[in-house]
Length: 619
Image (cartoon, rainbow, N blue to C red):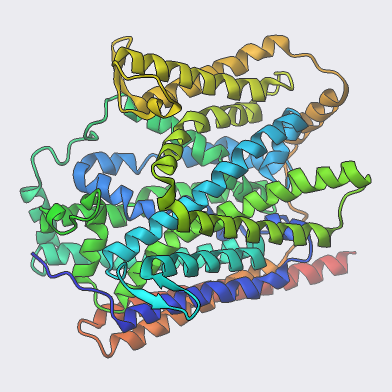
């Protein structure tokens, strides 16, 4: 069995430099935000390439290196199919939902609910979005840090800050949480976009190195022999297309969830309506569809190699609840040199940070545009100024960040409450997004159809959950009882709790939505709103000819220069360490990527100046 290494000073230096870069990004792009519209949607001028990278990476978290690694380690062939579902989901965005979101001409996701349904629907969704997602933010910070601190060996460290003593785990939560809050608070969506580009680079580098290296190690220096050994030594049935302990109907439930989440989830919508032109949404969706099919294989195949290299991974990580989830990290700790080990930890941090910063930004947009502005309008009969909205948005990020870090620090004191909450996610999310997905393409339902469809789906899920419990003799004495694992057979089809919740929520919510169309009555303000929305949805949202926002090009410049800086650092780190050639290779790749981005940005800037001068002469 390969020897597992631990981080050293060089690795911590890389992690520190990465966090510093993220902070500097927030300070740099803060000057891009002159108005609230800039802060929450980049003024509608986010370059489509930058937005596509952000769209791809914002759907990731530490789950891809932890939970997804565990699924791959156990299931093999099933994981290859499971993590390819994003391809058809983004193709649906290419043909339908990307252009439609851009045509809504909104500033926050919740504004669609107001235009399509009613202000009351917006408040209902806001309440059920903000509170749970702040809890999720704290949970994500906690989950990330407890895994990293335990698996990489600094959980037992104690750090005396003079006024308080923190464990390594607590210090990691404090530092990472504060970095996330500060750069998102300062830079808004521009900071999210640029740091997502940086985070994509980190993920791409580490997986590009890990893929061939894992199979070279598995094949004793020959990559092809490594693949041959995987096929020969894999456990029986490892390449079968199934998921252990999941019924066949799981594939349908999972696929429907992916179609919802990758087309109408709030952060997905934000990426689509923040670009200048609806044609940009098609470019985004197509490029992300291809990337979502190809790039996950770069970290799925190394984990499959890990199954052969570490057949008894439970003995390596007895303190972890699911040792298979450490398979990717175990492989990295065994085959990467120091320096790249730091990049690996940065990749895990980056994956979660890209999800957290996205959530911070759209939640702040919702609180500002859908709560603060309407309340101010009602109390003082006027909208707050752009400066006031910008200040409120930043204060919202700071407040939510402090609460999220506090939740992370106190997670252990809440017992299983947060585990129950996370499982409750499946109780309401499918029902929540069905009225959004259907409401974008079908507008012949009344103003109350969104809330009623959502509520009916959740009630139905609770009802069938309690019935399933009674059938299995599970006492129905608390809400928590509906999270007990069950297996039920409906019309001859076996289902687990996840499949039951998802399919019930989607079918009941969708059925209620279409039934409500029989009560469609248009009058007053609703008639004006829905008529205006219908007109917008069939009116292409094209950018003005010759209209160029140079902030996007400056964002490209900055991201490219950061890539060059990371590359230079990796090359320097390759000199003093054993097997440092891998660091040098990764550094060269990073520099080449950075130089390419800067070159393309400069070429676009020159073209923009030509367009500007031509437009000026025409006038």
